[in-house]
Image (cartoon, rainbow, N blue to C red; front, side, top):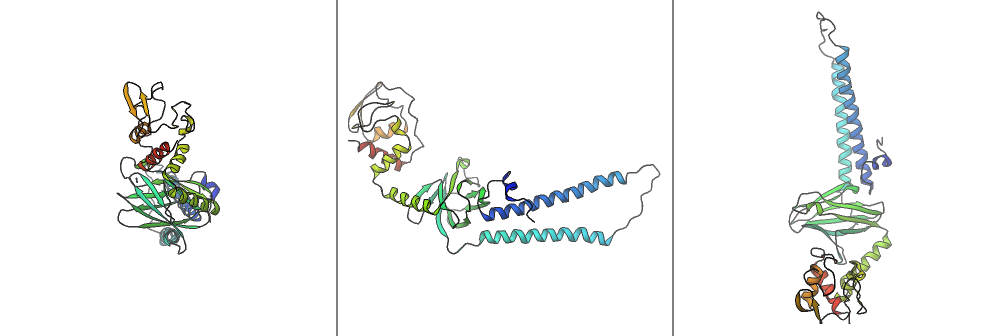
Length: 318
Ligand code: CUA
């Protein structure tokens, strides 16, 4: 009865990340194949009759045919049974999708213009990344901070609106390890198409580590958090932090609080605002002797919270 086995379905559909995804594909495959068969019978029959009953001479007379009760019954009854079968099948899968498991791992997910924010029970927050353990019932509680978004994971064949002012939910049990796309499937403004995230399915122990690390991160002192970010954003490849030697960019060692000579402008004091500006818009005040347009512009790439962490880190380099 499985019209498309999983291997074949995956060649033109996204990976099946859950059992329900397989069931949805089976139903979809059945609809596709049965529609194709119906189309061949209907159009094929029509073309065949056009030739078979073509008027050969001008005096040809059409035979008198009234109707055939049995035939008419069959062509109504068989499709009716197929449609009812499809209805029952679809209802069964939908019911399974919408019946929330009682003992599920719950994660809060907030849609906002334009990112997906996730918050775990231990208070750890992530943006555009949701990590869940494999083979475990997971329930996502969705809501929105602004307009309606739609949480969509093609590999799980599920989609659920995130609506401001109320909670909606979806659940899944991912049976494959790996990274899966999260999309927003409801037009929500300028960067709707950029509202993309990753749903990472990992082993239980990896998940436990992830949460633990995450929790540590949120309780880490600002400067420590900045140090991690500094590594993450690859700042260290151009800036020394433990010696005054310059690399591609000036060293940041003992830099905070000093005066800096900059190109075409009076000296500036290296304070919070100068560090901030130098991260967000590095070309504004280039240190004398360094080239322009080498450091990437981080405007829009780092949040305010990340900026404060980075600034505290630069301050701590003594
Ligand atoms: Cu959020 Cu589209």
